[in-house]
Image (cartoon, rainbow, N blue to C red; front, top):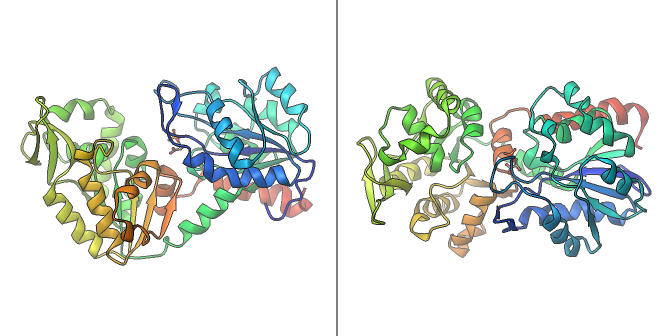
Length: 399
Ligand code: 3PG
């Protein structure tokens, strides 16, 4: 962004303000806060700023409009952020074209459009209706959605193919921050949380780069792949789908994935107990158990970098926080470079002893995207910005 004069320019900025939402309420605005800097800067530079983002996935409880995100942005940017319940239809185009210098407009959830939910090659994404309808109304695209840069979707990859594009402040900070850990070895990964489909895809790259410990739903999928009987949690694994399980089975053929040797379980009568893995579980696993914590701690102690994504248990419930907090504390006390990515793992830092919290090497707004980069995989959203630079900017000068 330093290289561009944004005065009077029509700027489309793609941010990632995908946040926890329940019952239509925005529960945490930390990603909105992170992107405020980019938007404030564009506003102060006198650009006509149009903000594009997604929230949740179609069909999910957190799939929603973006009014609240726009409202949350206003005090952070220090200017009104107009909102339109449209993405690329006539009302959105009318409002985009009527923007004055320095004015801000947020479009609605880009995933309301079916074609945004399909991953494809960049050339095909550049031909989507979304890109064809919107691109002619802009001079520059700012790619700031690092947390979604592992998705090859029109709003991330399509626009840089047809518009001069630059990286926003979040994208820049994340790429710089994460580059610090890319060459550190020995390295270990703690991978938990619920987006198992993504984790399964990157797992062979992760096991090639370091030791991988699992928790949360990720641990259940890989435990099943190793043939364990998860008792009442068998249904949870079934609901992940055959493709995910096939992916998990293939991944463990390529490299070892560590899975819990015991779990903190909750029985139907609400009783909480510790059970060994390997035998049929009688309660639903809600956290990793003490022997697993000890086993993972040994891996952490032998690492020079530890990368956390997701949590080990259902941390919303204080009874199932111990695994996540113990591993974070072990890593932070070990002297290793500790990288914490994603909303849930970052939230868990608030339960860590205060003195240790300062030892965090870098906190990323991204979960899945951070893991992608740490696994050494190419990110379509970053590649697209590089392409745009060579196609439009390096040849013709800055807009
Ligand atoms: C995230 O929260 O990981 C990003 O916003 C990407 O969301 P997605 O996994 O639904 O593509």
